[in-house]
Image (tube, rainbow, N blue to C red):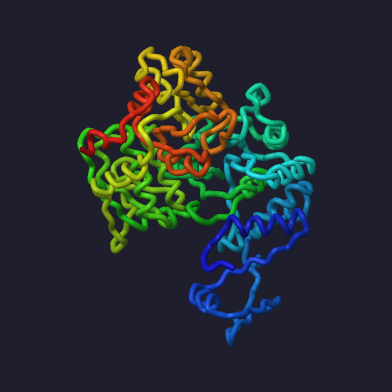
Length: 479
């Protein structure tokens, strides 16, 4: 029972019913009724009503009849394109109804997040769809997976995890998805253009696509991403619609002088806290002239603390002009806020055993910047330095000599995995404290790795790599 829009568990219930014959009712109730029910001692739910301590609420199914379907949509729904597509279309239509969409929209490409082995359910779903002959009908890339696909056995990953994780990736490849295995699909040559309607999952990719590229995609939940890729159709709702892309909050940022690369993930992290459920417009940042990598870090960190699928940066991002109407809430991110957040993300000891770069996957310019900062110096033997990156970036880094320079400094480049899916033994088991320049991993890392995580700039990460630690100091631009 929910009192507001909820897609993830609702989709899970739909798939449980569609694919496994396990119906699980989902009810959406107005906030005032939800509050009244929360105070009730007992409740009884029937096919037509909810009855609780003198309260009676009608239960009405979503109105699929109001969803306009094209002739090709109806043909897929009637089984004309096979069982897998028919099932996918039923799921899409049910999600469209509960999202309030009036029709479906064509998408030009997809990006699959469900290829991460989060549980056996991911594998069962993908292999069952593949066994039914499912094939994507639009170009579809794949997110980072849970193992280094070609090397997991040599890395000592146990078969009990490595085998199902690799099988999951293989199932999506069988269905026609490209084995890109990257959480930064916007770095690929296939990145969408402004105004292009796409269907991506993976929060940082969605936020970057909407915010920086000006493409259009909601945050599609796992499993729905495949359904859309099989049909080429998505519910016309959320930020596919122009009116839903407007800012609902204004955040003024006190811009310090001479900020470095750590400023952008820190601001993304704080902006998400300030706008956890709405699209914000950030003001005051244009004069700092953020690079594409700065915006990548900003978007990824924003996605860890906000559910919104995009943001605007005045004077920087393509849809920022006129994005904010009159009368919306206004907030400020102050230097004091930045100091507090920096301190909160740096409570661990100065000594570190691991430097983690590439969450999301590192770009070629980030790899070059790391090589330049190391300047031929070698890491300390007791400090591991690992960069996760996509195959395309690794190939480009190899071609221009960057990869060789990094390897000579003792840096390890890992494909396929990202820090949010990496696990032991690829994650160095002796690590007690790590440092990262990723706001995303600084947020998720403690829970994912069960280690202490420090946050800093690329220069801080390099200092830790060559000396074994870095003081938990404020950056120069905050002192």
